[in-house]
Amino acid sequence: SGQLGTAHRPLTVVVGPGEHCVRVTSSAGATGTLRLRATFFDVCRLGPQDDHGDSFLCSTEIGLGETRTGAISAADQDVFSFALATASIASITLTGAPDLVASLYGEDGILLTGDARGSHALLAGRYFLRVEGSGGAQGTYGVAVASNP
Image (cartoon, rainbow, N blue to C red; front, side):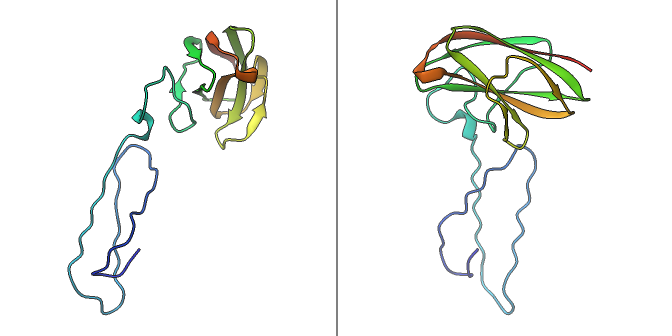
């Protein structure tokens, strides 16, 4: 926000893909020219490329019944997302390097379990799996999600 004719630092907001509107309202009696500049960039494609997204926002989609493979370095984490259309028993498998762990989060970002391997009764919705090394462990892995309503 700011007054006409003044410069203010940029307002930065993370928004999802799609169409966006910017509403500009002026103070009572304000006159003058308004200049608005909007710059959009893909926050998931900044910096060195990784095999999978490192955050909920930049997660890699994993379909039910699908296996994704990846590699974890000492400072890396990979985040996957999956959706359940109905309440289901979700079975999560993590194979590969022995000291890698998968944590399960709800769509609100709340940790549901620190060890996501095995079966979990989940409601319909979006979920996230974060794969990372325990104590700096590294290696390759495969992760899969299956469901039974």
